[in-house]
Image (cartoon, rainbow, N blue to C red):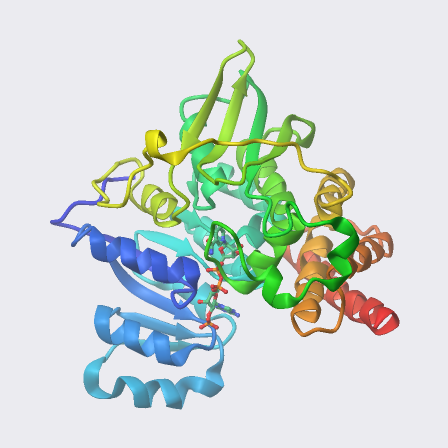
Length: 394
Ligand SMILES: NC(=O)c1ccc[n+]([C@@H]2O[C@H](COP(=O)([O-])OP(=O)(O)OC[C@H]3O[C@@H](n4cnc5c(N)ncnc54)[C@H](OP(=O)(O)O)[C@@H]3O)[C@@H](O)[C@H]2O)c1
């Protein structure tokens, strides 16, 4: 990969440009003043913000997953933009397949990110990957394909970006353990006996990170960390028995690598997604970001604890899905997407996310995985099953 320069800026497709990762990505691009340029922006339904971004950045392509919003979008941009508008659920994937770009930043939320990731890898383009569902659903397939095509996957998730930095130059042979840190979310110290009373707005109040709704609830259950164990397993080829999670409320250390010689290395930065986003987009260069630095003399104590299994049953479900393999991780992800929505809509209580998810996993038919379609079929099955479990427990 050539380094981004001000003479020929690296052309970036930003998928999910209207989301938390997408807006942080555009902020990184703005700060780097001409080293990167967003040539394609893709969103789901937020036409107001997409139109604003398109007027500001003048990308060659804009994409909306919901075609019903095309007229509203066109009215909002008026004559201020003359690029190509792609519409439909496959619009982001079409950008990855055909657009003239140097790197794809996948910040879509949910299973919608999978086909764009696949198309990017098939084209051998570097993939700056925030969409964790791509790896959770199809980690084995995607990483095998990326290896076969020498297509770089550059992790954006802060923990994996940290581990990626630490593992550079190692083939993994000398690694005895990877440790991912987790803030522990808003309920780290709350009495477990009161979990039934947790309201959606409390679960959405993350102590250290500002993120989209689903990942914020997943951080409160710690399933997000479970998904990250799955991601790490495929990104770094380390078996799950050698991947641990530590609660670290300050979110300053993002990951540790424990080496077989007894040494442990760590990656630190303030909890700001712009740091890993820039690292992935500019790899292998480290450019001046102008972002606040992590001054440990001002920081105070950094604390680390092992997570309590009874407080965070979803973490155990993720290890179970990894052990079962096959379609289990796809089922876990899709089931959770439905159950988190139901929790946010006030339809189920917080502990029922884990309880219903375990029921969905228990009911999973053990079918072979023979490509993306079988995983997406398992995803669709899990959504139906989660709705039927919901129907019984409401
Ligand atoms: N936020 C973080 O700090 C963070 C950290 C690590 C990893 N991640 C991962 O990054 C991904 C994005 O997270 P986020 O927090 O940025 O989520 P978010 O704020 O909810 O944003 C999601 C983005 O995806 C777009 N989108 C939704 N459905 C789509 C579809 N069918 N096709 C194309 N685009 C679609 C949304 O568009 P509209 O809003 O226009 O509908 C929005 O731009 C997730 O996989 C998350 O787990 C996030």
